[in-house]
Image 1 (spheres, rainbow, N blue to C red):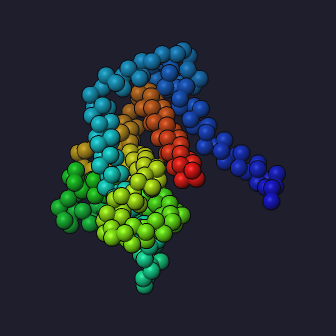
Image 2 (image 1 turned 90 degrees about the vertical axis):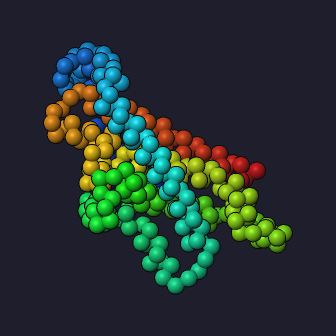
Image 3 (image 1 turned 60 degrees about the horizontal axis):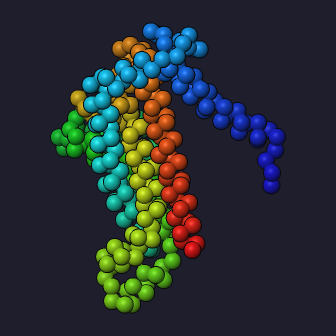
Length: 261
């Protein structure tokens, strides 16, 4: 059934509202003005140079990349195992457990942030890098589960049964059969987890302490002063996120083509 004209209009209006900030921020990042102004009076790369010449911004970038890499890797391991167990085993309270895994996505970020603040504070991990990694890992696991549950559900279990029949252990079957065939989906899940961890700001602001990530530093800078450098950082993050998501979609499509062959 084709959507009605009203539905199409609302969809276009919603997409326009999402795209408009990008159409404003990106041109402002190339402005030659000394303050935020739109449209820019002239074009310049001064604010991009300001970002790459700033040690504080680069340190925040390195922290964001390292944190997202570690937490997304741990999240893929834990989330893939959880998705495998949810799809391959039937047990009591399965739906309750699955809902618990998805809680960080369903609950507002502020509630999750307060809960992690209290929990990490009680075990002495508040304001530590380890606590930050643990928090980000918990946040990205649901996104990995969403991707991997669908992938494992469509995975032919007879391939595993053949391996078991030939005497392979569960670990060997997963390592030699399941992981190679699900590799595109695992890679896509890792990218989604990486992007979510990289862009996370609410939970990070609560528990990071003195550690600075790019999103946290952006909000801190907005509190102190509105520098045009923020527009260049935002533009870089927009481009980086789009590139990551396009890569994830391409990997998933490549996996489907390989599976079809």
